[in-house]
Structure formats: structure tokens, C-alpha cells
Image 1 (tube, rainbow, N blue to C red):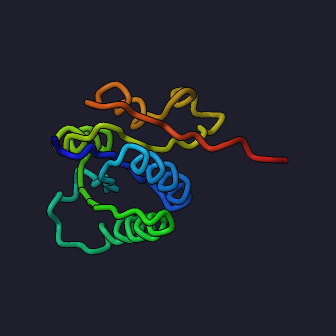
Image 2 (cartoon, rainbow, N blue to C red; image 1 turned 60 degrees about the vertical axis):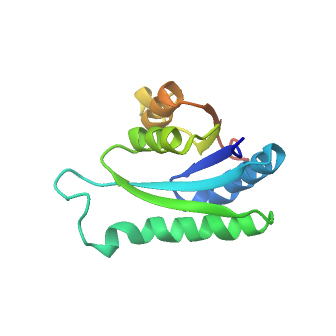
Length: 145
């Protein structure tokens, strides 16, 4: 029987530590392989296979940060940087293709003027409805006064 897989979808540097901590603990508890994914959303005017290192650089740095965070838990991870037009569709596709059993992702609290994002953001909402596996969404604690 193949080893279960936990995937963590990373979006930005400020949530890497907390998401990786959660994903490492869950993957160790499940005795699962851990995959870190970052999707670079590429605008329509830019070809997906453009040879511009600047497109990928922030994502590569984010995945390097994820690997350092995993080392604190003595966890080994594989990482993937993927270019796509829509991050939600890409995350679901990778989860399906890799046979992921649990997907961990974060969601930032919406800005007060963004009513459409009040419950969950568009990417999180899409993934929660279409993922072929369980999804855990980590929402940061409220700011302390």
C-alpha cells in the first residue's frame, strides 16, 4: 500500500512557518509524505513557459523557506513550483495527480471592504469545493490589541 501524502499549498512568506508547522505535525501523525506546493499565477499576457527567472524567484524563495521550516520538525519534504493561470485549479490538479489524502492551506482574514471574500477567499473556496481529498484551512488568530 502506498504511503499517504499530505500537501501544503503555500502562498506567501508570512504564513509559511505556521502552515509548515501544522503540515509537519499532521504528516508525522499520519506517517505520510509531505509535499510543499507554490503556484505562481501567470497573467494571460505572459506565456506559461516564459524564460523569465523573475517570475519564479519569489516562489523558489518561499519553498526554500518551507524546507527550512520542515527541518525544525525533522521532516523531509518534496517541493513543487508550478506556473498556472488559476491557483485554485492548479492546487486541485496537483492534489488529484499526486493522490494527496490531506491538503493544508491558509487563508488571510479579508479586508472589511471585500464582502465577496467575507467567508473564504476565492482560491480557498474553489479548493474546498473541488479537492479530491480532505482540506484543512488555517485562519490566523485575531490581532491582539
